[in-house]
Amino acid sequence: MKLFKPLYERALKWAMHPRAEPLLAGLSFVEAIIFPVMPEVMLGPMVLARPQRWARLATVSLVFSVLGALVGYALGHYAFAWARPLFESLGWMERIDLQVQELSEIAAQSPWSAFWVLVIAGFLPIPLKIFTWASGIVGVPLLPFVASMIIGRGKRVFLLAGAIRLAGPRAEAALHRWIEWIGWGVLLALGVVIIYFKFIR
Image (cartoon, rainbow, N blue to C red; front, top):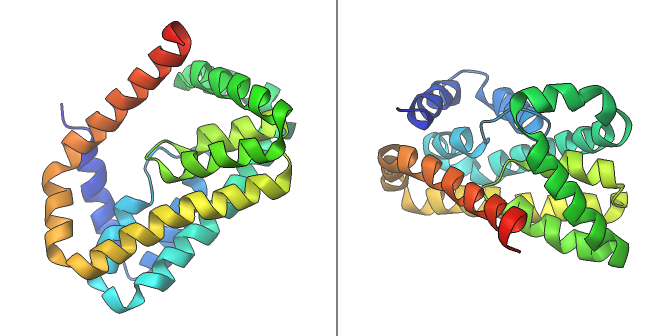
């Protein structure tokens, strides 16, 4: 079953849209709150089409990801009880509960310990929304939270945009060819991590 390639091809069409930059901003914003498609699938083709604007496009994605992360944090802090049935229907609650427990233990030691966890989370190909909501639920202090989002997500989007700027069409062709394997590989890795923390650790 092909799941990730159709989503990637839809993002490619968005990348060619005359208002692609606002669409990138919107995708980056909502992905940090609830949307399942990472903005990198749109950022990559946009950088390929306009390589001289790679830094601007990465900045747009980063700024709106951080703004979306703040909204996710606020919703986690103030509206989690209301949104819990929605997350249960999406199958996210087990992951959110696990992340809340982990972050609670880490934040109890030091807010800046939570900072490093969130920096790593922002860099990995893991849905950002899980961490933004969990941070709000736990009450991670805002300064470490915002700093971690900027550094973690910033490294990701700027490294991707810079790599595509340097590699050109070869990078996009490789991504298009392997996107299905990459997507399922990420899901498998997430499953292994969840099993490890739930049953082995």
